Image (cartoon, rainbow, N blue to C red; front, side, top):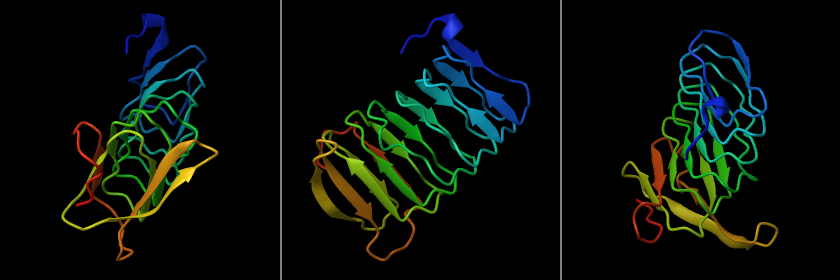
Length: 175
């Protein structure tokens, strides 16, 4: 994805709060000690890893999100239909729901995740550190007009080392 210079915001000064002005599409604010990040709806590419964020409002047209190594407890990704890349490892998430036909990468390792819900019109590969996962509640969501798949550990343990990718041309693999 190409961006004009005036559409990119790279912040390298330590701060606790960052409000991204409208018109900025790509935001890079890594290792700043941020506690609050306010993104404009124009943002499509966000890298806010290695901060102290407890909450992150996700813009509606987000495509790329790297928010690893924060303290995020909840990510609202339900209506983010364009998202392709999510790297949210090392947070405090316990549930992830992604309804995007474009999802190619989801890394949510080292969280407290017990359940992941995905639309899967694309082919996804699910890998989880040697533990067998099961799909439950595979259904058509008429409001979203997509197939939805829930993935959870049958032993109700957290899914802390899960990685999902659509790079491989295979069916959903639960391993």
